[in-house]
Image (tube, rainbow, N blue to C red):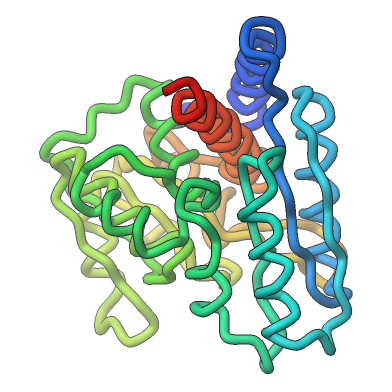
Length: 286
């Protein structure tokens, strides 16, 4: 059994990003810029945004966080996004989800300039991703793919089972796996006999947000298990969706929680922001 160490890989990627930023500043006089919109006072969202801001600072990326009350109107958020779209110093814009009920998430995400959509949620980027064209990829699935690549895990012809069909993880994860020529099943809360599907998986990716959803008897010998879930127990301990202790000895590779997929999400967001800055430079130089 080999641990897929997302923390170590994310540190490596962040160092690569730092070098890229220094080169952009030195050669093109460009500092990549990222704006984050945080609505409300959700503690988990605030913590995550703080981690993003810290990672940007360490990499030399200019970042700004726009904190807004949960009573803000949809039109007010759209006005702010319009100004961000026009701001030449901002290469990336992301909206921390979830949003309050009076705000339509789809309307907000569609308002972001696709060239600044470093979260990869705009329909333009989603469509290009599904078509296997160059696009900004959602950071978490992007991080999973990068992790599997780092460990030289061949995806061609593998049976992949994804538990969870969200727009943020499950659906884009399936598209990326299909593009990599894997055979993909996507399960959800309505799936009948989940175990029958997971036992057929060479690679099992779990993103359901449910503690111990996957247990040892649901994993076939030698499977690769990627746990995207993150749940906080009453004790304060962070755990994933997979019973790590029960499953690890059956796996050829497995991600821990914490220290697996989570750190990769932020690392790939930084990669997307630098990519956006390079594309801006290309447009301005023409």
